[in-house]
Amino acid sequence: MTKQMDQNRARTIAHMLLQINAVTLRPNHPFTWTSGIKSPIYCDNRLTMAYPQVRDFIAEGFVDLIHREWGQVDVVAGTATAGIPHAAFVSQKMFLPMAYIRSSAKGHGKENLIEGRIRAGQRVVVIEDLVSTGGSSVKAAQAVQEIGGIVAGVAAIFTYGFEKAAKTFAEAGIPLRTLTSYEVLLQVALANGSISETEVELLASWRKDPEHWEPTA
Ligand SMILES: O=P(O)(O)OC[C@H]1O[C@H](OP(=O)(O)OP(=O)(O)O)[C@H](O)[C@@H]1O
Ligand SMILES: O=C(O)c1cc(=O)[nH]c(=O)[nH]1
Image 1 (cartoon, rainbow, N blue to C red):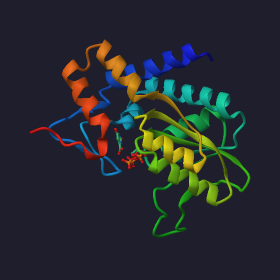
Image 2 (spheres, rainbow, N blue to C red):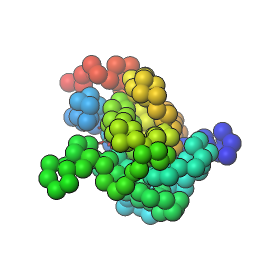
Image 3 (cartoon, protein in one colour):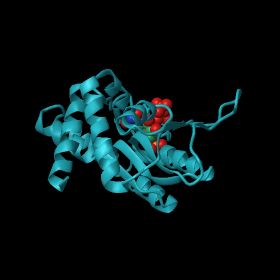
Image 4 (tube, rainbow, N blue to C red):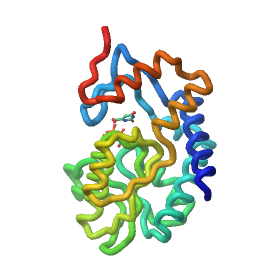
């Protein structure tokens, strides 16, 4: 697959996310992200589950990306919760074992952190729906490493492309590859009129320092 085809796929997925209203702008009533960051934008990739054509395009994208970037893998592992359905779709397409990683170990039953089966020495691709700071996916990948799995990389649908995430992945020595990004989403949204120039400016001011951004009254 060429760079141009990657770009086309990134644009198509961004377009699909906009079309299914997965992206919400709420500058006056910011979203609180899992990291605690307050944000005027939220990308709800969970909605892709509701659209077979969209989720299938994403799954095909993941299969292509995994083959190309990491070759043979043994297990497809989803991050709880939003990565789990995509790991299921991908593992079915690749006819590979699937697992998922909880955000914390279960408090009863077998008290597992990882469900399914990952054996020491197996090559695992971790499937995530979205990367903001990268904290959740790196934690999940490290849980796989702790039981002896070899993490080929994390594959996510979307990244905000923050420096902080790049640093987190680099420090953990875990590769991250994504199907689309915030940058592409904004380009597509602006081109098709989903967002205005004013909203782009607001997003740009937030993007400069998301951890300290305050909504204007
Ligand atoms: O890169 P990060 O800063 O860690 O943020 C991204 C994570 O946040 C969301 O999950 P959330 O915690 O909302 O839980 P969910 O998957 O159960 O919906 C998303 O699905 C990622 O897992
Ligand atoms: O960081 C998050 O919690 C987050 C951001 C976002 O845009 N979408 C999402 O599902 N989670």
